[in-house]
Length: 69
Image (cartoon, rainbow, N blue to C red; front, side, top):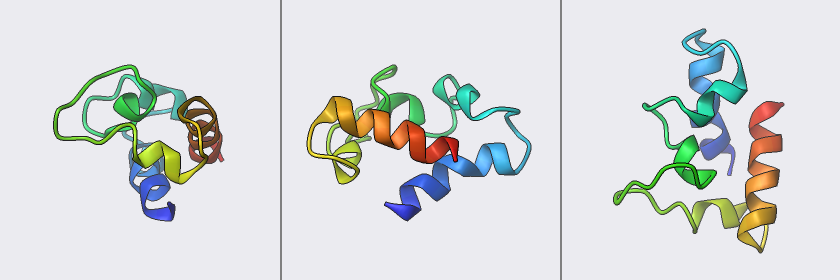
């Protein structure tokens, strides 16, 4: 779980995107797919969020909250 959060925080920490909210449209990390905004055949966007919670909607809320920290 920490690896997922770390990967998604790399662009804001490196100053590539100014705000965590920009990850929703940033094409070079899978955050938009995990949030259900984009579909990528190579990314399991249903399993990974459930590492954070049992249901997909709640998992997405928690992942978004964790990434925003």
